Length: 355
Image 1 (cartoon, rainbow, N blue to C red):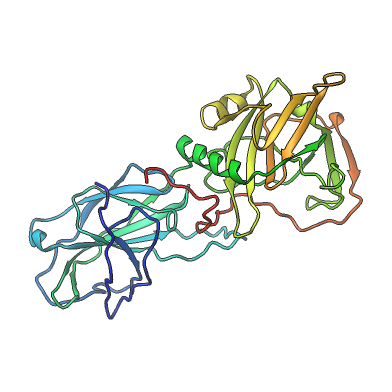
Image 2: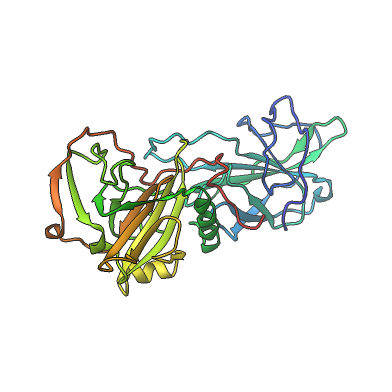
């Protein structure tokens, strides 16, 4: 059962609340700190039942359902549940700052299972631990609480097709006008943590960004002094399918869009058909391939100006098909976002299903 309404002004001398979470469907949940002691909200009363056999189900990229068993004693006195939700420690720290947000939840005692949902404190494809207490609110505003339950581990899911279609719609809004280009460049790996292709789809990353005034590849590069460049029609043509893979930012003003180019009938194409929204090669807001209306009917290519496009090509590319040369400008710092966590506070690129 979905949590029904937002709790207000739940306070305690030992565990002060940090403020309300907005725009969440956790309507009866407030985020608070836990002091690490057994009995953070203590009032001397008959012991409350400790949650047993915790079960996590219906896991998505930003929600899950939780239920547990309880002994019948004092069950009728339970008014709230305290949920301690934490990310598992990961030794591979990310260079992009992921804001610390409260993960201690206070929920009204609703019938179980209870849905916990919110992109503020749940990230896609991330391992979490969860423990639960039962609590009884007293007339003086304090709480009698049980001991903490056992700690359960679970992992959130990738973005679903529904999520990706919502991300696609948001990305289309800010894509901007289309600029012409003729070549693509090999770049370093990128991709946000929650995309269903991150770490699962093999391919090469390419950039199609151009200088605004020339329409040519930038003179400066964050990808090293040597640049491999290939003509766009070798990878992007009517025998290629185009898919939308992700839309995200990393606490910056600019946004990334991940696209996938897959030769029709290839393994990469089969993989993407089952997981990603397909785009019309000749009519979309990010990357197009059209026959020139006048002249010899050769292919003309355009890319969106106002987002950073990261294009994955799912098949090997023979070096003989392109050229390798040293860049004429400066080598810049890498902008790779590989396996990075997106900014959960950005209203431009965050979505949630079922709200």
